Length: 265
Image (cartoon, rainbow, N blue to C red; front, side, top):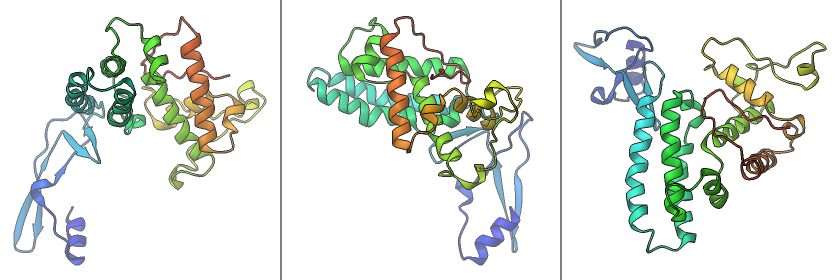
């Protein structure tokens, strides 16, 4: 921290200590404040267990419970306005309201916070379906598959799979951050998975590492879809196949386990 503060001083920038904090990613009790000497004075930076960074609530255990609570709070404020206006706005504009102001709250950075518990993801899924039913002015007991079909929405767990698949496509085709270019490797040998050009899935005790989830997600997609010519083409193919599965399979069940990915043939 002293080096960082020195860099700020050399570049004639000021550190706002009242808005600065540090976080340690472990289960230990709170640490003492960090004291930083600045010339003849000394400032202290407080430790925090949860910190908001670029719209993401990061906690010291990376469970993202605080972020789910934060998202649910933002959506709840909009639901009230949406419910009060449902008898005034036509169906077309209620759908526009849901797509423009609600969906981004569910989608933002979902490939990061999707590692939270199934309980938290289920609670978010309940809110997701509630938004759709209010937009369509449907009974609260209406089957979810009918709601998704009418709104042309994917179930929330398939939206997360779509976003992660898109990000993996960018990495595989060197369209994403360069530091991820060497993170994934193809299987070699004469195995069936190698013949399908699947990625190597590293061992993971909790199945929460990006290397594990990214490889597993990519391997769930058929080779035909993987070789799409562009990101837009990949998204179109995947969304079409996901919608077909949801709309045409009456036995389809939502699975909010963070490491579940629907197999696309």
